[in-house]
Structure formats: structure tokens, C-alpha cells
Length: 168
Image (tube, rainbow, N blue to C red; front, side, top):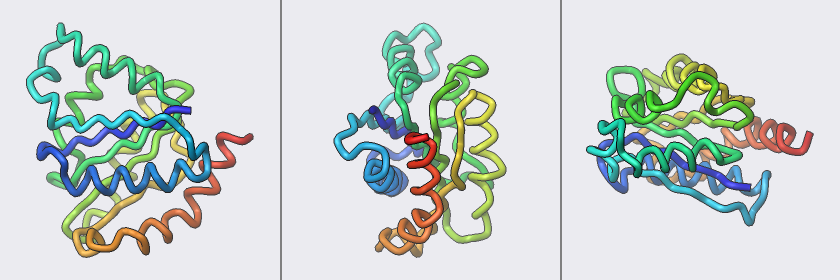
């Protein structure tokens, strides 16, 4: 099993990346603890993402699409996901993630945008054909210091849903 972590924060090695990796760690406990992991910090691919002829970006998109489980994370910008994440997923055709499971993850300053991953990021993933069997994860700046409580609360409902999806 392969888990891809795609992070659309324009800042490399961001707190959003840390949250996404923690979510992937939690998910791996219910799908396959020995799963292969692909980490895509889009900040490291900047100019390549804008070049539609870029072999590097084309290869990256293929690798993500070949993953079984995709954690897609973004900080909240203007109440939605970043343009960087949008540019990456614009490279895919409709239904390109068919048969894949995706988990939307967003970070934000406060709870005021807590529904952003459900109202903006989830529909993008569904449009691309991914199954999103669990609710999204939203983490505020106040929770960044200790992710365990927020991951535990999210995991109570999310992890069994993901496990059921993969185990039938």
C-alpha cells in the first residue's frame, strides 16, 4: 500500500506538512503500518508546476495518482485551499483519482474556517474521482503545539471509516 501526502503550503517544511504527516501516521495504523510513503511538499516544485511540459511534474502527478491513500493538505487562504494546491490538481483530468481514497486536511488560524476542507477541498477531490469516506481534518494554530488531542478526536470516527473502506 502506498500513502501519498500532498501539501500545498507555499512555505517548504511548513506546519501544514507536519500536520499532514501526523495524519498519515495515524491513517497508516489502520491500513498498513508498513505502507510506502510518498511526500510531496509542493513548495519544492514551484516553477515546474507551472510548466505543463515538465516531466518532473508529470511524473509526480502519476506517482500521486498511483497511490492507494492520498492525504491532501493546505493552509487556509481566503477561506479555501491555496493556489499552489489548485495548480497541482489542475494537471489532472476528471476522474484521474478514481479508485483512490483521499483525506482532506486543512490548517488555519482559528475555527472560523473549520468547514473549508469540507466545502472546498473535499469537492475538488470528489471531482477528481477520489473517494472521501471520512470527514476532513481541520487543525487550528492553537492545536499545532500538541497534535495528539485533535488527531485523537478526529481519529475516533475517521480511522474506523478508512479501515472499513480498505478492509471491506
